[in-house]
Image: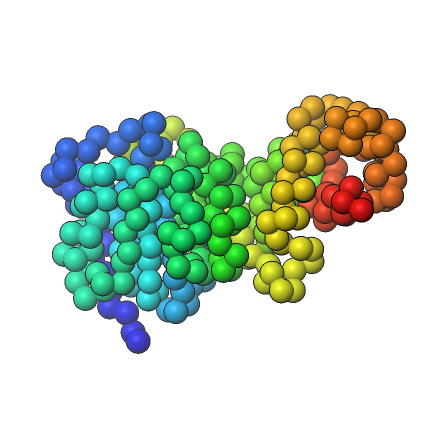
Length: 290
């Protein structure tokens, strides 16, 4: 079924809608509203969506990206914590996208409190994530919904760089490894300040994750394995300057036990966490589980 074009929001419409419900964007909720239709369509194009996709959008705000998604895919679940914005969004969609309004499911909830029964098998996450909780929200949704195959999120440029960083880079760390557990991560573009209202003080970046098919993943992408792997990653980066033999002694019970596990995994005990790929951490976790 061909989806109709929606009337996307420009700067004037964004301010009118905000004034209508008395919303002043707050830093606490990470609210910066996109007001440039070209940017919206660029983001959606970078997500490489199919009409049959069921997209989760966290923090839809006044509906800029939501409208673009609804002209692209069959189903959108929008998760909004602000009650005024949550109440307004269906009205905006009905007025500006008309017959596609029925394909919007609104979830008025904190994204970090979502459980697996709240959303029916989403296949993609496309969102301008609230900057203050972007990584926790991303990892929470990837953990809950193995049905997600594609992620395209806008975050702070610094966070985007960190998520997509490779081993050996000084900004490579816990978010890089944990995002890489779920799929192939890469930077997918940059977003300037002037497409937002209010304009943030920092640049934004797009991150794309092509998630592993969990039946054919390079390692077990399961809750059980994640529960063993992620604390290991946290321990390895808790004191970045320390060697893994020293950094992981608490995790394994002693420095000698850590060294033995590292050697079994083919990793030098004198190495540091920032030199290990996600695959290396997986191998170490597997050794620890034996």
